[in-house]
Length: 80
Image 1: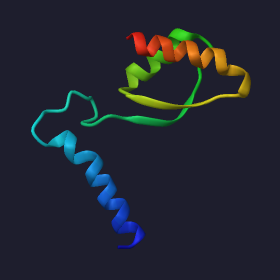
Image 2: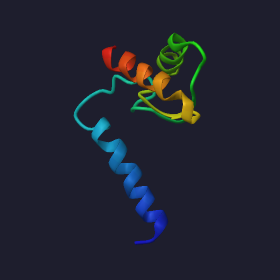
Image 3: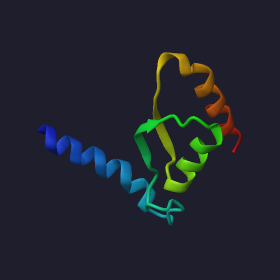
Image 4: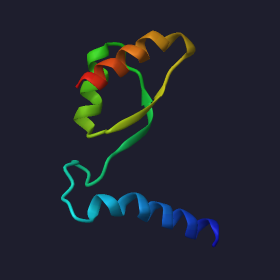
């Protein structure tokens, strides 16, 4: 198996469980993972942006001094 075949198999394996036996409740047909999310200055804007774009999870791009802001964002997202 070459790299391309492996990645195609991995992509299918990630999508198929969403498609089999149930309708997706996600706007995009499957969960969306934002791999380039910049932390907004206002805490409420982070959740509003993610919800508005239909993003399920995000990889935050922050500086080292944003730890407290990230923890507060995680707590807000977990409570929702």
